[in-house]
Image 1 (cartoon, one colour):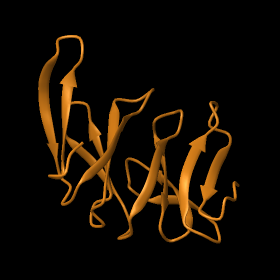
Image 2: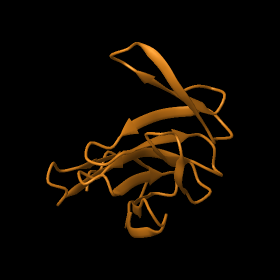
Image 3: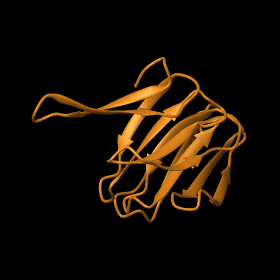
Length: 133
């Protein structure tokens, strides 16, 4: 992740650079691989493209976003659904193939934390008022 809107992929075993993922218009803050699917996400301060889903080959799969700053992003255990939190006091579930929002979970304050249970049945969210749902 970097300030130039790009993330770099590296082969850890070979200690070599593989490719650059360029698509954000602002700083990239976070990157995460799905554990059970061949995708990774990058999260940025860019409100036009706050989350981008990539293939491990570096192809842009989907842009997830809704013109607000995304404060956190987490893969569902199946690697096919993404959960995000944002400054609009909500958490959302997204289909990574269509980019459609599947569900919205509301809070009274900005939502900053999100986590799936290991089996993907439960989702926990945490907001700025210290509430957890």
